[in-house]
Length: 136
View 1: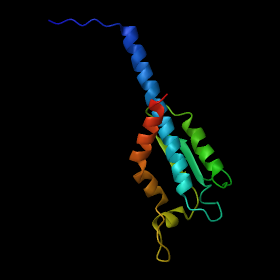
View 2: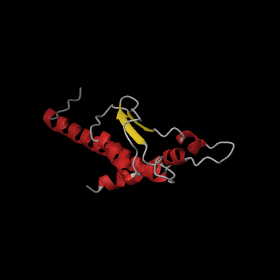
View 3: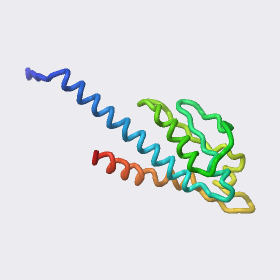
């Protein structure tokens, strides 16, 4: 029989530190994705770009107020992320009634794919996020 001695307090402290780093990564990554999707949202009047809303563990009420030109949308999305806990589900939606048409297109216009392109960039965004927090 092989015995292993370990200090439970040390192990628990290491686990807490690992969870803190995991949460830090999750928050930073979601904030980076928020920034990217809002910046990629086409801008004509500002309504579409400013119509982003988020919630934890349930779909957000996308009619939470008047949209803004985009900077406030990023802040609004990131404010929701501040309350995230490991295991939560983060939802972000665009409440403009025409967002789906701009994303996928219609018979009269081509799709802009601002959400799909952002999601497609997720691996590189995650790598950049990880590199940034690894420095701290």
